[in-house]
Image (cartoon, rainbow, N blue to C red):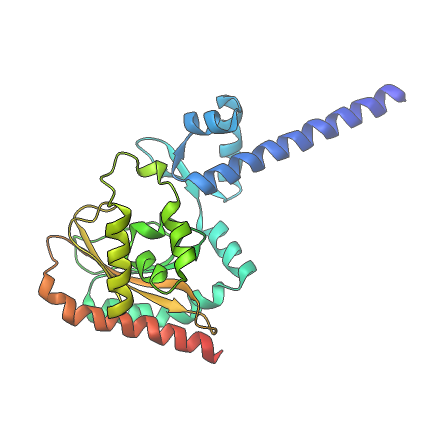
Length: 264
């Protein structure tokens, strides 16, 4: 009897350890996506074979998917995003914004994105695609540093100076090979954004080369910037003189979403 009890306890411990290992792998994918097996094994210090089994289990459960089939890089699914939005109340934002995003996409025939702030990042939670063949595409659930996007810049333009200072101190190790703009340049863009009401990434954006975008912040009922609407246009189709036409549409969409949130 004692041996049987010891076996049961040992089995329970192994099962618990397996669950904890799987959760650890899931957390790292969510934080670092897209990420491959080798990098996951390195950052978690878990054997590659074990990591691979965890990934397969999480994919079968609908939590993870292969985002880059050529390099076998993994990311979270919409199931994870939808659950997170419901738990934080941000699902209401997505529902309220949906018709507004559709109208903006129809009016411009360009890709429209809705991103929600999560710390120093912007998480893409909704997308309306252009009907044109050449288009800008970002996976739902993609995490992008605030300072790498026009939407993120629009959010930072409405934050207190000390919070902006903290965000600008964040290291961007994952973009270490990119020609990052210096902090002074970022501060100038944030200041310009605060004056005109929208942020602009030109056709030489350091994060998404050959993409131009216009972003405007969405506020919660207390006026705090919690999200952003972004209009993304391929460089080959964007003309600087379009700014005067497109920017008011983006700002109007963001303002309408903010108003609808306040009215709920």
